[in-house]
Length: 117
Image (cartoon, rainbow, N blue to C red; front, top):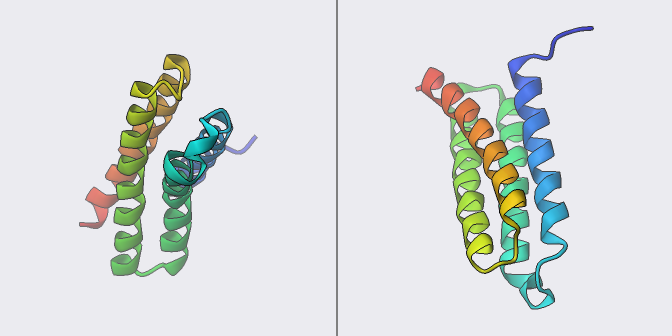
C-alpha cells in the first residue's frame, strides 16, 4: 500500500475537519442557522477550499496567499468552536475532537508557510 504524501494527509485531515464540523453543527439551535452555524461551516470549508486553490495555482506568491487565508479561516473556526462550547451548542467531547483536528491541520499549514517565507 502506497504511503500518503504530506499534501494528501493534510487534505484528508481538512476534509475530515469540514465534515465533522457539518455533522456537529446540525444539532445547533435552529435560530443560529444564519449565525454561528453558517459562519462555522463557512470557515471550516474555507480551510480546505483555499488550500486546494492555492495548491492548484502553483506559484509561490499565490500559493502562500491562499495558505495564509486557509490558516486564518482555521483560526476563525477554532474561535467559533470555543464560542459554541461556551454557549453549550457543542459537547466537550466534540469540541476536543475538533480542536485536535484543527491543531494538527494548523501545525501542518504553518510548516508549509514557514518553508515558503
